[in-house]
Image (cartoon, rainbow, N blue to C red):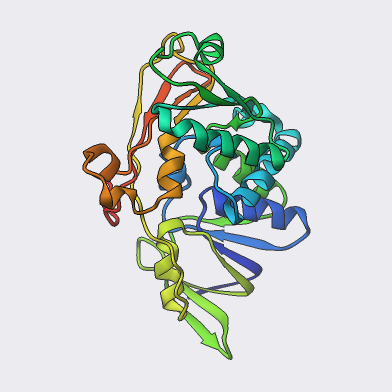
Length: 300
């Protein structure tokens, strides 16, 4: 049986695991990154790339989003913006219903209070920014500083940068069992596809396995509240862009403000957690979405 030692073991090589590995290695730590599959085979390879603040509500999520925007700017400077197609895209939050105007006025004030440049524009101002939008809309929140990346490229770029700083990457290894003593993990036994075993010892263990983090937590007696939720996106062929900015329905935000809306609504789209989004990629494709149903681990 192979034995390995490291300072910090990170489980999960999606955007969170890759980002943690890069930052920890940059700070001088000895890091090993483990994934049961290959990079970008999970959520980080099948999502939109909007680096957004405007869709967040007050609290930890908004504070993290503001910090995240700065981190992406730093990574673009350190790694190279072209490596993961980082760009300032700007965002428009579209007001579909007149009764949402007052809520968006309040949200604009909140964002401006956090130092996020935000303008509430009426129908005419909205159409000046994006002429192809429907004139039946009631206006929009214009957030010009919102950014975007290509997610799978971002993961691969961070992994390359992490490896360049000495991170050891182990693919297609799944944890069989953790040894725990005195409330601390002391080692983990890993197995590859052929059944070969590896014992890994680390001083610290980081779980970044996305929706599978709950299973990892349970294996060491932790109840990690990570619940899978499926989002569905359409990806178009390349063509002329429909819009230059990221578009998102204000309904996306109002659903967050009222988590019980899906259960109470008679509208089948709202029950699915639907909130319209459209993102133009740098290559002329469009990502159109999305849904947010709780369907467990079903990816069909």
